[in-house]
Length: 567
Image (cartoon, rainbow, N blue to C red; front, side, top):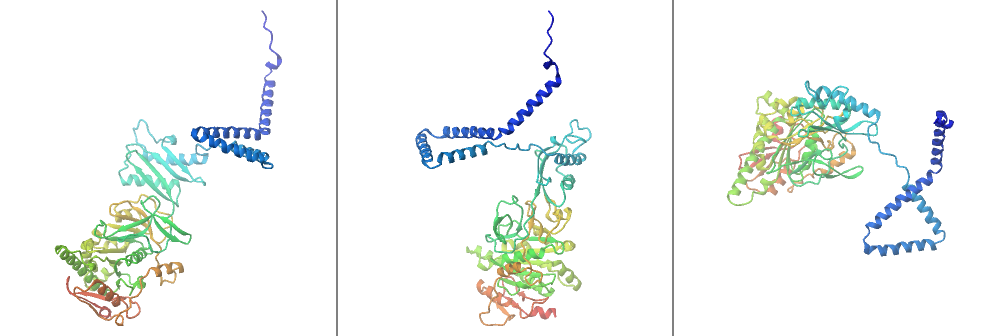
């Protein structure tokens, strides 16, 4: 039986293609024309699904009141003029909004982002690959998706977060190996930003995160802290488990602080701060002094002799501001004897079953700025090293309520004495410093990269064996400096204690004698009277030098003897 030929329309491929193109064009045109109706119908269907779900979730005992409310609403709409028309417009608008086309979320990186990730992957191949690995995770022209499990870019296309896996044989426990990988990631991800590196040795993963800049607009102010707590500065979110309210030009906000705890139960009773010239170590000491004056007495050693602490001279609670060698030696000798006196008095009180005297529990702060300068001067003159007199307060200060803070520069760090190095377990590094220098001072490398520009008071802090934290010291400039802004000047002046007024009308600088066993209030008032300078603040004695006859003897304060010795 002969086969009948197919119709010509079925054998002509050109006609079939034209027909398909015509049908596709007609379908697209119909879709464009009826798109509003399609969106409204889709929205009505979604609203119906949502309404049915709400009705199913409503308890049975509440369905009757709900039906009554719906019926009352429909009746009210029907009775209102133009109510049905308005209701139809509202329902149509809600359906059109609900049924609109939602742009699908991007599930992968773009072309430029993929190229950036591939370049970063290729840069890590020499560090995460080894010869003889049968299944290498990092190979040239390999697949970066196997190694990079999480990534995120900002609006400008720059990497802000990356989680990568590395092979088990990588020496992640060695600091040089980590440093090399961190340097590569820092360079390839873009300079000018701060990066945080979190190594998970157990899972074999590394998380890179871009950090925000620390706030530099926080000025000195009364911080909400407990007695014995000192705010060294502020760090990034998530680094510490608490926040403090601070005031700035925009209002009040909560920021995470770096809080240093001192006192008898502190494991880091003394602090050492190092930095480059102009890095803000003196600002840190000034900030600590203003906070310490709320609950204790302050003794300041200004080794540089530039008058950075002249604003504190003669204030209540400031026992001395010394910059001359003779005054510093006499002051530190008194501080050493005062530490011994406190220990003996507290020990006798405990043996007698009594509480420690009040004058032994009031904190005493010794703030030494650049003591190595005085060490060199003492060696040139053949006199005693001032740092040697700090040995007793450093060693026994925690039990006696004496806290020592030493600030100096990197160039003079080798001149610091062994007691200063051994007993200052709280450490701060400010200014530009190499990772090796930071590690040498803090005992551990920072987990973050340094910013492109280091503002004054910017650095790192580590309290004991804790984590290395980023630090930004609150702006506490010298109010006598002409370059200080008016807002910061007023902020510092508002925190200064008042000048004490002598009760007997004695002139400032009059010799005062503290009798043995005198009440703490009497000694504090007399010391405040004696610390008022007799004239302009000079390079020698803005505050009297102090002498001690012994740990339990009387203490004589003479405001002019040190000046005569310097002259």
